[in-house]
Image (cartoon, rainbow, N blue to C red):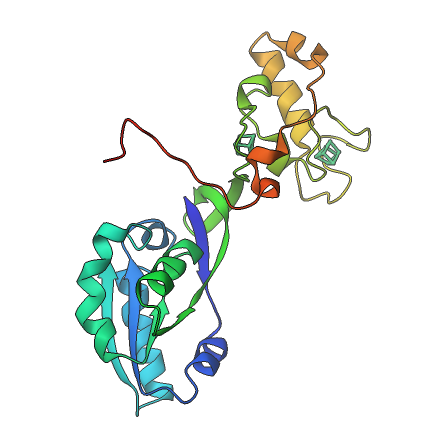
Length: 218
Ligand code: SF4
Ligand code: SF4
């Protein structure tokens, strides 16, 4: 999922300076799961903002998915009456709002952090950098792009000590983990394969990406 966290209240208030009517728009997907912008967080932000700015006229809505045009219609009437929209979805959701309401000020109330998952309640870890050319089948299911501090495709770098990364002892060396996992799977032979340079044009380096699936498109 996309892991997000709410911005500090002063930053949100700063964006509301001079505004009178706002809609706080949450999302029922990733930001609900990571407790950043679901029903509960939208209600909490509304209460906090009203304490700080009792003059505000605030409405709230939690959309099914803010990153999906078909669910934005539910916001149309509220957006028409507001002079700004506060998005509590990830940066994708906030941009979808900005595109749908070109004359309405839209700003994010959360920071979009990374693609990851919950390790335990309240702890999320990054797992994928959306490189567009997944190599997990060659690395024992452990992402070298995100989990190796140097994003080495052919590690380790030589600085690993007792399973820890030389960059930060709090980080497990991804290539040690890859080795251990492949050993357990009886596939250490994969470490003999030198991975070629990655096709970074499929990552963000190639510019904004677009995926078209003819079998799904209308
Ligand atoms: S190799 Fe690329 S797509 Fe696969 S997990 Fe890592 S960053 Fe994500
Ligand atoms: S010690 Fe391991 S995780 Fe850290 S940079 Fe080197 S190979 Fe990557």
